[in-house]
Length: 370
Image (tube, rainbow, N blue to C red; front, side):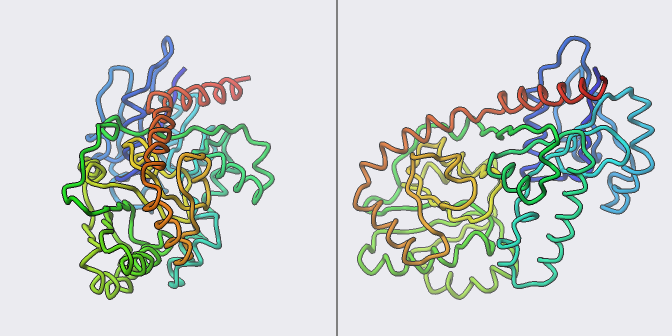
């Protein structure tokens, strides 16, 4: 069997991490080969393995329009030439006239309530267009991979026609470096909370800052570290609050993913305030690190964290303030829960992700051949 991976729209970030880890953990069956299509920079950044053939094209390095033209006019001939039985599109592209498995990675595309948090018509329209593209990718696919059961149910209920498609839930993995033993907070007497995520409307850093400002009136020892890139308009609106709270809220900006685990080591607890996720990889990283987790009760978060954390409504300042107080008054109890969540997170391995992904692809390929 010859499988293909179409990664023309994967450039960096979580998509590239997923692709790299899949390739590293991939174990081919007898006489099985893998052909990988991607841009030059992506191909160069991915590991070399004897049974994987990398295929680039000048159009894959020229932007979205040329990427689409490549998928329409070049990919079908390449797939036939290579004898590919089935393609996998982790970026969720619609592959015209080819047998392929699509993948869902972005719930902002489907959750209108969440994308409507963006005040910009341009942002909202972009996600609406992406929803149409993603639906078409799913509709014309031979199968669909979801990365949480929450996403599978939400999307299938919104588009019942997709329920007939072969599908599977395959969770992403987490790197082993997040499981290193925690170190004590560098500042004795402080309680340092950490939130790693892009600063954005559906991440609710504004609510957190307001809740921490209220909490500081009775607990001046609490501080909050924010790590991640920022949506420019949201950051502009948030800047006055960041300036006013700079004594206890520290925004570190974007940090390379290879260095983020160092922030987990210096934290006492992790807070996750997102209301829109497909699979919350950052939450799993925090769980694996052994930190007590205070978590949003939206989306797939309870599916991942179970009963091993504290939940709150991240759209409510009062609820956020209340759950922070609950943690502060019961720190020892929730450190025990942290051990439970760390053990739970150990099941999210890239080896398991690769095995389940390629098992599903093989099943779909065999079904196509019948």
